[in-house]
Length: 157
Length: 157
DNA sequence: GCGCATTCAATGCACAAGCATTTAATGTTG
DNA sequence: CAACATTAAATGCTTGTGCATTGAATGCGC
Image (cartoon, rainbow over all chains, first blue to last red; front, side, top):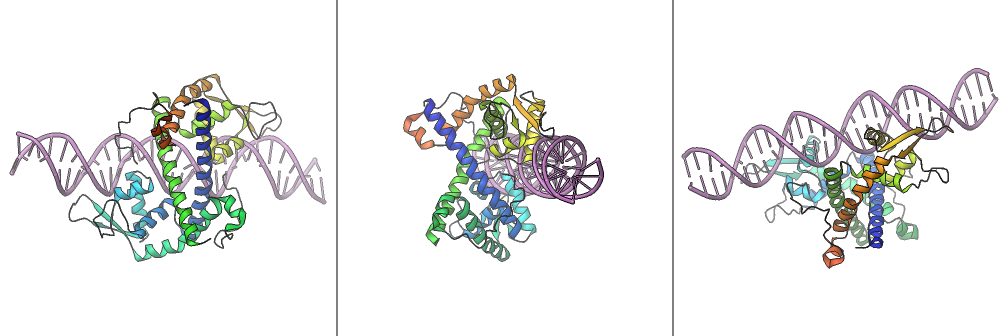
């Protein structure tokens, strides 16, 4: 790999960092302000709502903690606490797994489904508006009624 | 924007999250283990070493804190503390700005240049190996002597 | 059946990050 | 010049995260 390739990779990495920072920063604020959810919380709810897991028996709608952690790119401990937060809010529930009593099954509650459904339009609106801004500028999307006009008070980036 | 577009955007976002998590996780560990630097620390050192700033007088090699914060996607307070850490290690130095005595100029030290130069091969190696893994598989890069064979003990993802 | 390594989830701990506030220096307006 | 608004950076505080460890339940070898 020569210098030109290296430069290209570095530029690509910086671009990825910039995009990630931009989108996740806005997403965090919008979801948090309007729905009291963090990005990771939303992501976990979404996986649970979709009801597909890499670590479950076929037909099951319950998840192991570890399986969720992989999907949302969090450590096992981080997810353990995240689940605890969601449980405190009544959005998910833990159920012990009879087959292997070390394990814990997590599933979404009705309240959780409701919150996820409420937050989804905001989530999609932010992604549409910020992930591919050039597409939006070209007129492929409406400004999205959910995305506030941006009061721009000291957002950190 | 129709449902298909929305699905596409969501998939793109998840892909971006996955790539970001993968690369920054490995990068964090490699830089930290081998050079005692975090990803953000390295990024700041790199900007200082490059010596270009959006907020400096032409020809200057000193940076305002705020200008750096924008480039590395950190809040002003986070960067203030990051600079403090780097200064404690002797990698950067602060100098008050005579023109506007509220401001602070940050510049890299010789020791800082050394550490950055040491860490750069590791940084590049990780990017090459993990940012475009398909390119590497195709044989466009050597495995990079810097990137350890991955002992894989519980890396969280 | 009895140890011993393994695995799952929870917890202690340390630390980096963001927000809000503070302190200091500039600018601005009367 | 005096009062007030603005800007730069540092700091108090809270929170989310990862690593290491713990505790419990399994699985395995003998």
